[in-house]
Length: 297
Image 1 (cartoon, rainbow, N blue to C red):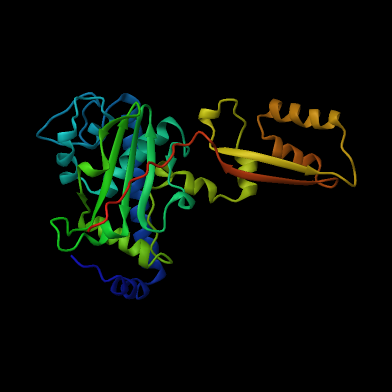
Image 2: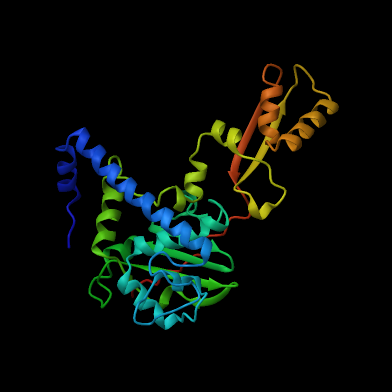
């Protein structure tokens, strides 16, 4: 089905603020209901979709929890999953799982690391598994005059760093709902916003937070594998030198309170020095797996 996003825009613009608010409320309520059901099941090792343990597999009832590979899921079973569930469903499920293990830092969806030629390019890590979603603009349009002339994406799955599903194993079709959401997000982004909710947020959302809020609400961690951000702080006190003893006191206060050195330094040296902090993604976030596109001859 072709999606005329200009038509959807006209429909949206004709709606009253109350109608828009009601639609958003219903959507938020449904998301909250599913997120709560997911978390309740996850804590017990039970899938909220099929109500069966993650370790079970029923070939006549494909389910997203197969992708966790707690059961005897094989590569040849993957088409059964994507025939039943669209990209949005699959992506949401693995992102939700990833954030149960480590919030934000297990999902590398940084836009700065995505090529301009890509519609999708990000990697999600959960325990010993990494999933990557990849879709170029050519994939999204479909490869004309070939058997793959439909909009599709590519999917990779690695277990302990070893191959399980490769990008070129499947050309996974988008559902009509996927296309509706993706096309509107790309062409009507100023009024149509698509995301996976707080439970499915990744590093792009993390780096979009205001610097002041990051400093105020983050806590120290001595385990690099658990961190979301890396802070680099520079103190310019050339007009009013600061002693090494005071720097040590700032460090001690940060360790005692669990706050970052950057936040404590900014508060204690506010009127005496210029404290600048650069926040970047932690080095421990997963790399986005790359896919080489094959050009037609």
